[in-house]
Image (cartoon, rainbow, N blue to C red; front, side):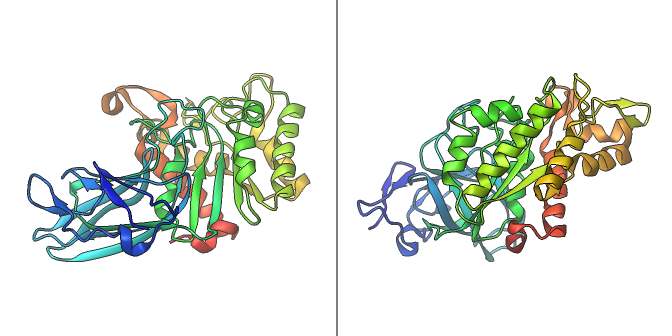
Length: 357
């Protein structure tokens, strides 16, 4: 069934199916104020915004950027600030085509609705210094591998800049056939995430055989005892495995808290009751034969190599971001931390590795 334009979006036909042919924008659907044609379902010039009224699920999205008489520079974002395509240049008249698998859910962003619930359906935004898009197609994805993210504010789809979670930056590296479903939520500890029906239970209900579930906690387990932390992690592992999924533990990235040129115990997640949370996570991984991404160690090496001054660019700075925050990441910092996660996925040949660009 065909989509029909409705305002700035297109609606799923009665049969509940999308086809590649019916959703491709030819560039002749309508023109913006500058007379540059944009695909059906899209409007604007900078940014170009597109909306497709699809149900929650996973969708194959193919976009063609460029094609105008002038050179372009285009980046592509979906839903709550998930970066799919970093700034990409096209020569005048040239077209480049890219494909992705995109997870759509409602609410988008943080599952508990923190920061807003977004719009139902799929939203795509083409930004950059001169964004150009000549075609967009959307169709249901056929049983993609899904990488689920369970975590806190350092992972989640942060709806508003400058705060950025690493989970909304790793999407640039994931090729078609695999989607990232980010269920991380601000302020969550291992215990609160496990018990909140919008979080772990909602995630678990969607896990299929061979899907990966990346589990990162620690920032908000400030008073969690070692036995409770181990129990929470083990419960998640057991329940993911029962669904045929592949659990992966991720130790928390460091905070930027220095004593001289070295990070403090608090920065390294020794919590308020003396529990070394990354060490406990590594121990659970060994006991349960679960892969562990030691993001604490990797981020420690990165932050200490930059030192007390230069490492500030990874986090939020008053001079740049309007706020000083040594826990949450800037977009640049989230990208660097996400790169460390991707590095480990490749090194350990985890399920998502085969789909990385």
